Image (cartoon, rainbow over all chains, first blue to last red; front, side, top):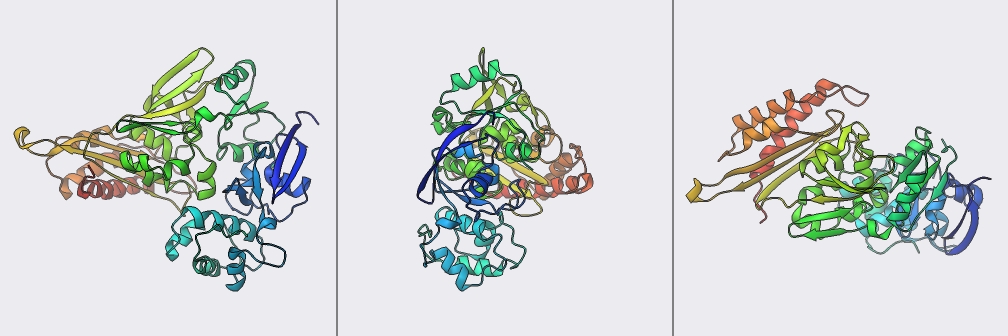
Length: 160
Length: 295
């Protein structure tokens, strides 16, 4: 294919090197090239938040990021939260509070929550709702997700 | 919803980026991509080459100059939002950054990208006009600097040439004792504003010069036309005033309402935008006036 570029990325601690078309979205790179389908694709223009993941520690929309732009980056998708048989603090809170139903928004929600725990005040319900405002959920009515975030008292990263 | 094919370059130096732009037809600069990527996904923009300037280290950072500052183009909204220097000298910017989309967008979106994109509802173009920012552009034949008001030509249309890169935005120091207020009305938290407004009131003077008065007043709005607008008539009415009462605020807000020509779209009618501008102005002028000066 014309214009292919070689990129190196670390995804959930594992190094990958692949040739990609510049127009390939990071979300599609993960799903189609690396078969990591935990990153969900909703609106593909940055509105729904479903594809949000952690890139170099920051939450980013993977549909608004090209795979070539992730060259050299460290990425954590939902598959990288927690360990086998052990939830991360954020996952544990979501589980305990029934903060998901169909689960489509959950990978993006978790990435948003992990980043927001480090960067935003999340002490009040209003602050939590504002932090979650960029992630759409069509099942829960958000209440249980808000409850879950309010139970995570740690300001640590909450991934592992 | 996938971009049309394009080639990609991510130069490490500005000179290299400018050289690529100079020799390539239909190239497009990408900064944080938070406005450009949706347009690429929708195929509203179909460049032959994308020049990614995010690897140019010299284009990142905030530098203080006295009480003024210079913000390099690739500085993210989040970096500006959390900068102690910005909060100290331009608290109105810190406040406005909290209204820019969501954390994930603020992590990647940049001041240079937002100003180059010139969305008629975005915060940065309005702040640039309010703060009399100087926009620095680099091109194949050198650099040039434009006043914010001269930089914006219309909705998503600016003075930036296809072979130029916006490199930094200089913010001249505000007068001492400047009070501020900023707010916007959006359908949901983080959405583009239907109307946003910013007010700066600089208060000074001594008993020798007749007591304290408003030495400088600035009002800017966005979402009410093709580009951000400074309300010069309303500003003139505030300048020189020793005190502000409800009657004066009403007159100022009327000048704002009657001085704009908003249009209707899916989010709001022109009339609603006029009313929002009126009530936002009233609220913000009052709130800025009542704010105790920080310095």
